[in-house]
Length: 395
Image (cartoon, rainbow, N blue to C red):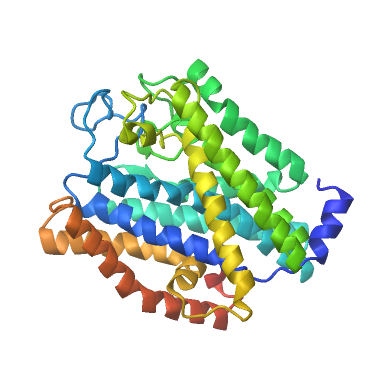
């Protein structure tokens, strides 16, 4: 359970939406549109960021050491690495804040558990829907699976004190490679529990890209951050403390990631550098997320939040409700599901298949999707605000 001091401190802070958090989430939704446009439009897409995933054509490793990485393709892929860690971390942050708001309005603990449970099932349902629409004969478990299952785990874990959440999350991120090396090294046939919880792979009928445990660790850290924000973010001085903490944490994470990548050993989840080129330095394991990858992306996210918080603090007025990043950040799940459908449907309608064009067309498709979905997300946000207690609260 939370300590008495934590519970009292959290309960006295403000629980309104934080524009900086919505901006940051909206920014990664833009990057996510770029990544998925590349996945559906770009014949030369680079996605060899795993020592675990197998090539569906050859059956061999997706990444073969010594393979050349096209700089433009790699850069497009690399900038989108920020998406999933930020999505998971800020999901934890927002959920921590949201549940405290509900508690302040009189919700009982079992009501909070039920809300979290239903929200998780809705997210998992959307993951299943996208698999059906993909029509590949398998159930593909992507980032919504990681979020939904992590939320189910948080029904129990949210009762732990903040220090325990940080210890569990950071502990797994640091020691997870030891565990995987001992019980689930790269190669070999995978069992269903392995692909659901530990490593990516296939076990009929599931093809798991986002096994839960690594991503749950990021949600745990985000949940702890949400509690810290509620405790200290109600004043200007508290906001400054949070910004300083994020600045220190972000730069420290990037420094440790640089050292580990330079050592080219532990922390890279068996995806080692071929040489000292910039591309090889930045070529990190996302599936599953290596320690170097996690430190890099959460470090960059922390610095991005510093910028967003500083802008919000200095505005001196309420941020614009029309800001595209704010709108996308406040309708992230809705946008996520729709952008998949729009990108996939447009690729099939215009090119007759998937990955039939090049990188420029992928960027154009991403931009067009963002333009088309912006007013749709505006309308959905208005509808959700008009009916706050409807089923829309879970989307």
